[in-house]
Image (cartoon, rainbow, N blue to C red):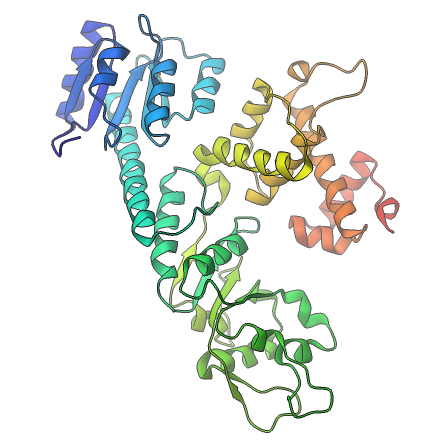
Length: 434
């Protein structure tokens, strides 16, 4: 596509609407090429088209959804905004399932449409730049920040750039936003990718032998032992949940960051170590020990899922595919009510909650499978969410062997709320203890 490609490809069969919308968008500063039908528009859209397609859903012959499917065969990240005079919920859900950038019902505000176009342009530009960067770095495909939202693409681009440096950094975001996964991705994209990747969970500091586990015992001692820091030599050391690390332990880690050396138990002199350190945190609270400041020279903020809802269908399909492979099962077709739930739910547990929903969906736990039970499409959204929530709690208990404190920490739920939900669903934690 040439550099003077239009900002907008407008596909509208109504001539007066097509002419009026094109003129109005041009007054908003956008260049527009107009077409009366899908086949004509497809001839004018190249695979590398950097703009946005605005199309009516209902078109003569080939409709907008079919045209979008063909565009996705060329480039799955093509940005399309649908318009229609038939703005029912089913049509909106269908558009979201197809990966639409946005959806407008007629009559629509030109100012709002122009704003949506510019936002979609930003997504498209970031995607093209990110694709070029991946090609230049010649790295293997990573699951990474799946999605086409501006937040996901921007974070993926920055992650690729940061990976090529050797700077310590801090990954900050709400629980479940994928901080640990992003840390692994940055390591895999870095020059240290063939070296160790060692993760230190804050729970290790509750162990009486935490210092031995971390720093090891002097090699000259009779019972010498290498610690996790030494085993990370040459690679990447991840400090998870730095706000949960005890203050005294944080102070010692600050010394490690400053000097790139550590003192093993029983040793009389520190040992140098070459490693990159990545910290993760769900809190922005000040840190009097200075650990956050040492790691926060570069801080990557991971957005909550509620801020990137347009990524949910793609993320869900990815997680379902993972579990279908690992569990050796084929998931059922997603019903309209389940798509509605996926898109409308706020996902306070973020990617972790969505991943668990995908696992339970593959296992059939999100549907009412009891003989004689109502068909899923007849079940209220409230009932479906309650079944989903109960399945998550039971799965969390099964994974932890009925250890309520671990469930509370993993799901980030206040203790009283957790027990209230146990009572509501008749769940007995003791039944999950081995």
